[in-house]
Image (cartoon, rainbow, N blue to C red; front, side, top):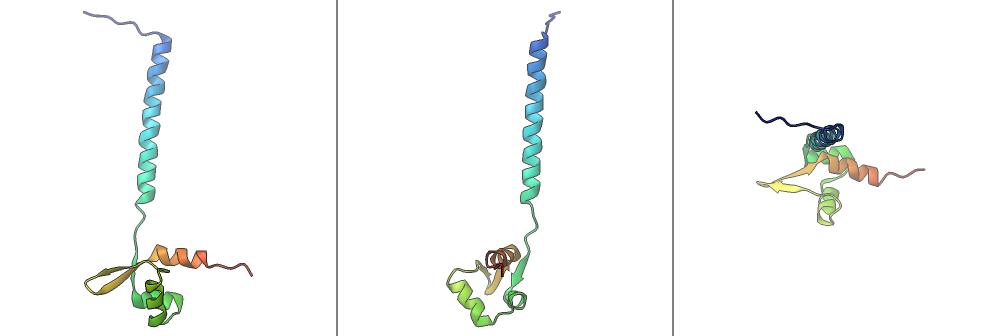
Length: 94
């Protein structure tokens, strides 16, 4: 039978290594959970109502790159967070 002796210093190094590993795992888990925010997609008519704009204004916002969008099978979708970000960016302190 082989017996090994571990010094206090070696034991402390092992404990610190384990703690560092746990911190990495927990940090990665928290970052992954934060990034899993639910994506809410809106159609054009919903965005028009939300912003109080006409279809032409919405089209202009798409064309000039003001508002990102995705087109799937002829239907245009907008990420709700992009709309909220646009509103926040254009907020004026009067």
